Image 1: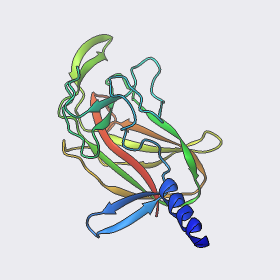
Image 2 (image 1 turned 30 degrees about the vertical axis):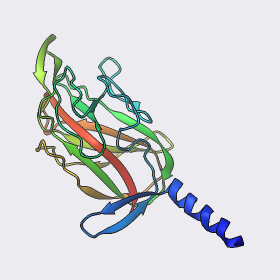
Image 3 (image 1 turned 180 degrees about the vertical axis):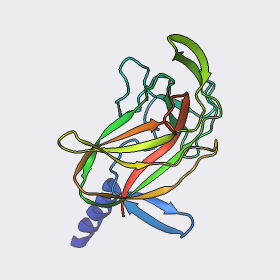
Image 4 (image 1 turned 90 degrees about the vertical axis):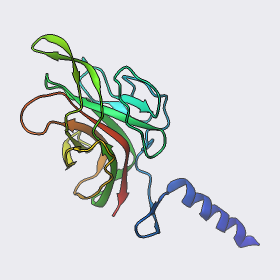
Length: 216
């Protein structure tokens, strides 16, 4: 009986500090520390120019921040994709004037040097209609051209390193890859920043259903 309390505490510790996801291909349960808060963007009220809870804006302060969409909830940008995990997803754009939206999060547990995996689900918007500044004029554009997403690590000295650049979001279906990365110095913040394909500026958009980091 005296060991029962120890067993219960161990179970509670595992539940509180571990994120477990089932791998449908291998039918195994993979448990990784939860480095990212609100990784599926569910813990916030949806809305345009809305920063998900647990995240902060790192985009141009003179431009609008990211958007948070919910399944079947109409919005003036006419974004209609349906989230596969939960009910919500974040939308980010790059603009013809060279500005980019950006989210960052101070990690609940720093990433120490070592091997990690990044799990992400992203898609191209079916529609993403908004106003853009082009040649000092404001016009209506559809921000649904393919772009890539940079995963940027920030160390104690506020120095940035691109840890990963995803392939372009060519499909309006959710793409759910995992990427292996190696970190050589302690990372305290993570940035998600969309980026152009090529050197030209244009109206592009990306939708993110979830973003997680796990130990490899």
